[in-house]
Image 1 (cartoon, rainbow, N blue to C red):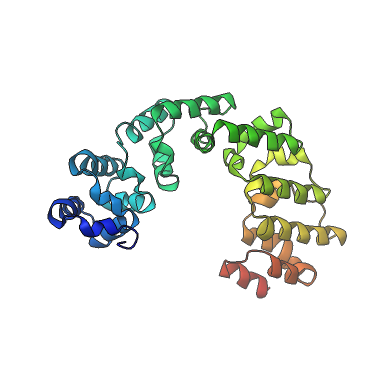
Image 2: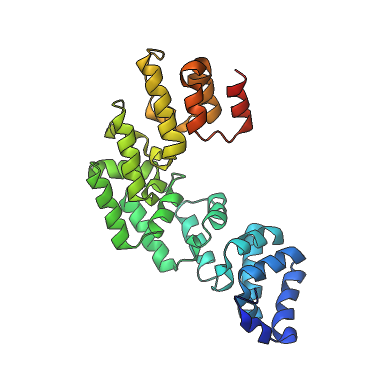
Length: 293
């Protein structure tokens, strides 16, 4: 901490450091949590106790319920101690609630994407307007994800993303459908979008319309999930061991254990070794299931 912020050595222990630590202690933060928060953002020691520390911690505690939960957020992002939360976080929460987003979903965003709710309220309204323009229904539980994805790109990058989808062969209507079904797909890199499309279409079993129906396939790991499963199905199909090639949705959303049970375990001699070598078998129970069959 001192090596990255040597200025702390010159800080007044009595006037600068101790008062901030005491605020944490008075609010119930553990010694370990305090140390980790300060280590992650040593500059927080220079922020005003009355104007930043106390208001920020009070707002977060009222939202999250406990000091332990507040510490989780501050360990993830020190930004919360740099911004007036009443003008950003609180204002954005009230606005999103007025759009129909429930608090449970909003709180999850604080943990998973801590900087999302720290945008200016003016920008947040623009993000919501763009999500509306893309056809996302405000009553959908995907609406908050649509707004967040929009917030992650400036106008130029957003237009580039739309262009990338168009270059892959998707129509404007296709793009709107995919966004409404799976907003996070729009955060996937151009390289991966192209790779997933090529792998799926190369099987001869899927076309662009299949991807439009299940755009979440773009999020799946190509090397650990899509390719190994397609290889297994290709072998089984060539040996007439499956009556019907599964839908893309079935393949991308099927849990590892279920895929093993249905497509690998009954055909270990044909595909067992191949799948073991290429897939992401991290779950010991799945590995045991495969090896003991």
